Image 1 (spheres, rainbow, N blue to C red):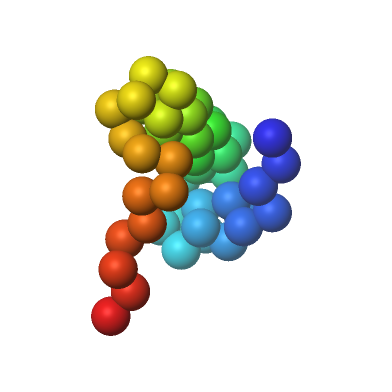
Image 2 (cartoon, rainbow, N blue to C red):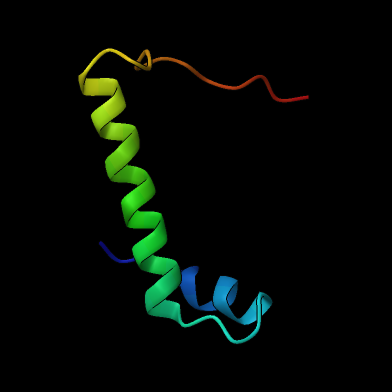
Length: 50
């Protein structure tokens, strides 16, 4: 996956490599997809925005 904001996020946290941020985001997406696929998290579960 390509995460255009990974570089700016990495810069905001200083000393964090863009590749590390991208890997973290990719892993989070994979875990979320797995939770949806196994029914642990409803597909339409959206946090309320205040």
